[in-house]
Amino acid sequence: MKIAFIGFPLALGADRKGVERAPGYFRKAGVIEMMSGIAGCYDLGDVQSAIIAEGKHEADSELKYLDTIVDTAAQLMDKVASVIRQGYFPLVVGGDHSLGLGSVAGAAIACENLGVIWFDAHGDFNTEETSPSGNLHGMPCAALMGWCRSSMKEVPRKTVAPENFYWVGTRDLDPGEVQMAKQNGLHIFSAEEVRHRGMNAVMDDIIADLKERNINKVHISIDIDSMDPRLVCGTGTKVRNGLWNGDFYTFLDRIFLTRSVVSADLVEYNELLDDQYHTTATWCLEALHYLAVKIKGE
Ligand SMILES: [Mn+2]
Image (cartoon, protein in one colour):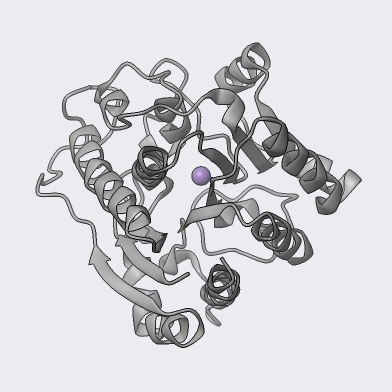
């Protein structure tokens, strides 16, 4: 399948500058040419909001940059849905993880009974009530499941059932999230579980569950903070004891073997936090390279 590259140069959901530079950084590094050579790739440019984020707090006093993020995510949703319907593979490059609200919602419009794998150190399913920071990149999954009350809930025209979500690499849930996860029986495969059982065993479980639920379309949302900070330092919310490259590439091999992956995100690369050798940028470029190889086979 051919790739449609979509940039989402927004850092407002993380409320920390740097991640908005990533789509431009990767383009300059030649990512479009590289992907064109592997799978075929169209650069659809960047999604940008017409709403200027002047104040931190807009419609909802607790939620930072809500209006701008909701507007941008809604545009991304339409783009992702139409790209999938035209037979291309949307690869959305952030930017912060609030973009998941738009990309997952778009994939859910285009695909019946969508499954979502949220590959991340965090849960990102805080609601307005449980968010400790008011940063929207910690809330997209809650909005997608229909748990939010702010205008975030208006973006997904179709919600995704909580049982269709799978979290992998999780190791930093906020107290409210721990409670919600228990109450709703969310499928959470922590980094610790991956370490103890191995990624292959975890993927056996996920793939069996997808089959059982008749889910044959899957969106994968990759937050680079899923990885161990010793490997990936150029990101804003690092958490110790993360995943390793073997885990990551096994995950991609196994999920693409199901031939069900329809769209993907790669988010939270922050050039300003990278080391002098740009180790994290290199990690991302290699990940994008491998994704292109896998997408080609879809
Ligand atoms: Mn995230």
